Length: 108
Image 1: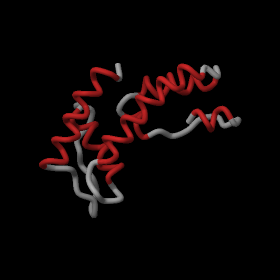
Image 2: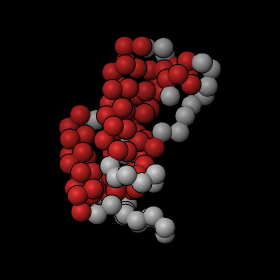
Image 3: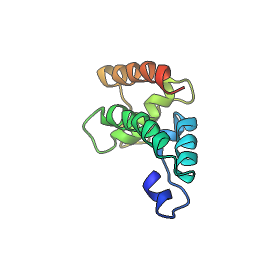
């Protein structure tokens, strides 16, 4: 997102904003203000989401399934995904649960 804003864009769509909207709003505001120190700090948090939640599983749908599973773990919605996708279960779901526990300490 910062690159888009810094080059004249008006915003971006960040899947992680479904889970931690404040981080993405703050990143947008830091980008508009050209606060590079704050951008760097917030980007590290955002990249932690991408390196964990979105890396669970091996299918190309892991991004969608990761967000749905995370939102379910957070109590925001259920983890239903339409066929042919399959929700995370077992070890994959446990990984997402652990990541959310970790994030709740650093994202807020």
